[in-house]
Structures are given as structure tokens and as C-alpha cells.
Image 1 (cartoon, one colour):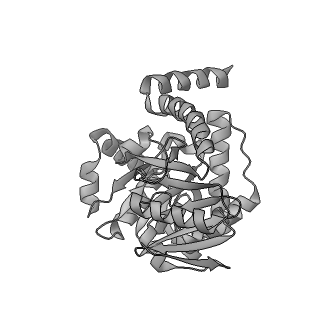
Image 2 (cartoon, helix red, strand yellow):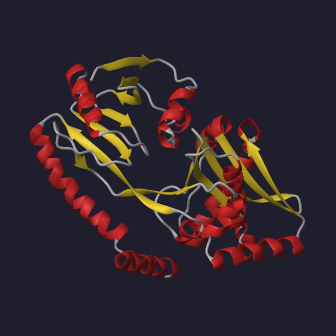
Image 3 (cartoon, one colour):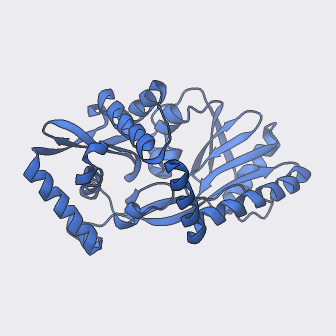
Amino acid sequence: MEVFVEKIDELITDYEYDMQSKSFYSSISCFKYIKKIKNIYKFTINNIEIYASIDKKCELYVAMRSIDSSILDNLLEYIFKNFNVDCIFIDHLYTKYESKNFNPVLTGVNSDVLMRLPNTIDEYNNLLGKKTKKHLRYYISRLNKEFVIESKIYIKNEITLDLINKMVKFNDERLTNKKGINKNTDFEYINCLHNTARECGILSVLFLNGIPEAFSLVHDVGKDYFLTDIGSNIEFDFYNVGQVSLYKIIEFCIDNKNDESNFHFMFEITDYKKRFGGKMVELYPYMVYKNRFLNIINILKYKISVFTLRLIKRNENVSSIIKKIRKIIRRG
């Protein structure tokens, strides 16, 4: 397989690439504003386009993509031969890397939670459990009785910095009050998130008496929708305003989908993601070392790490015990 390489001096919008990647974390807007990648190269092999950052090491940005192992084998051989790098990090793939030429080292345990979008809102409602449908109807009905409510969708340039700032503030307050995590997101990150949203974002905002109280932000990459940020006022948790806002953004995505569109609830399964139709799909991050001795050392190191993470994240009994311990620590 022939490899074509292009050095990129400045990232510009590349719709063709984004349509192929169909991944927020492997999208041009994410590269520009969230990851801010440097020393950028674009590789093309068998018409598959892959971006990478190459300095002393190489990072292949293929998160939430499916790449054939033979493609990766040929690309890694090319990079090791033509660049002075000792190791190559392969971002979180949907597919396992079963190499014939290397010994890829699995470095972590992570997952995406996704749903193939139904064709209609009625189809989606039929997928939801009885309790979820009942609760949504109840909360929407109660909100309508007690407030003047309005649900708005803002697309790309319509999304203001003030709305993004308020969403992040609500999320920070929730982490502090509910989980004891004192997070004070800095303005630089908020500004980066705003710039990214202006390129490919869709923001659902729920207004109560004219005041925005709940937000759900998705990014549209190749007509796959990625739920990257949420935020709601904890004072209105009794009305479940956050989940009402989420339901509204899913409605929008169904109305604007194509035949292959997925909705990504993002990393790790939770109760609300399951209730709204999400299913967990494993992701596979790898490190590949040029030096075989380094490879052997890191296989041992990461095996212990991955075993521990899998025990914590995938064993429900262990996860339950850890959650109980965290609650006790927060209370005491």
C-alpha cells in the first residue's frame, strides 16, 4: 500500500475529511481548538485519511474511528522508517489493532456510549422504557404548568460565548455541590469550546420564564452527533430540566439525521445514558514502540494498569463499592 504524506502548516476546514472521520475527537475543529495539535501531518493510504502530530513521538488521531489493521501496519512502518520517532500512540479506536508486524500495547480502558438514531421521533419514543417516557411527560407537563418554558436550538454561529459560559458554570457548580469536586473552568477552555461550537456545534437551551436554565451541546461531524457538554441549574433538579434539554437535542438530531447517523453520549455508561438509548462500545488505545526491549517493558507496565482499570470500570460489584466509598468520603 502506498502512503501519501502532506505537511500541514495551518489547519483549515476540511469537510471531506470530517465526513470520512465522522468523529468529533478526530475532527478538524477539535484539532484546532480543543487539542490544538502541532507539527501536523496528513497521511493518505488506500483513500483513508489520518492526521498525526509528529515530533519526538507520534500521535495518530483516530479516536472513535474504525481502521483496518493492515492499514495501520503499513502506516506505522512508513512513519518509523521516515521519521525519527521511538513510539507511536494510536488514539482510541473502535476496532482492535491485530498487527502482523508489531506488538501493540493496549494502554487503557475506555468506551463510547452510542445510539443509532431512529428514523422518527415516534420510533425513538417507542425505544424508551415506560418509566423514562412517563417521567419525561410528567416533567414537561409540570414545567408547562409552573413556568413559561421555551426550548431553543442554536446552530454554529448562533451560539454565543455567554451561553457557553453559563453552561460550563452550571456544570462546575454541580461537580462542587454533588461530587465535592472543586472545578473552576478557566476562560481559555471556555473560549476554545465556544470557537469549536461555532464551527460544528448545536446547542439545546431550555428557558424558564425567559432565563436559560439547562443546556445540551452536541457537535455534528459527518452527521454523527457527539454530546460533549451539558449543564443545568441545580435549583431546578426537581423538574429534571437537564434531561428535558437532552431529549430536545435528540429530537433535533433525529429530524436532521442521515441513514447512518449515530448519537454519541460519550465516554462510559451511566444510568441516564442507558435510559435514553445509549449502548456501550469499547474503545482501544495503543502504544507501539520501535525498540523491542521498550515494548516488552511497557507491555508488563500497561497490563497491570489495564487489568486494574477493567476491574474498576467493567466489574459492576467493584464499581458499586467504589461509588459507596466515594459517597462516604464526600459526606465525612
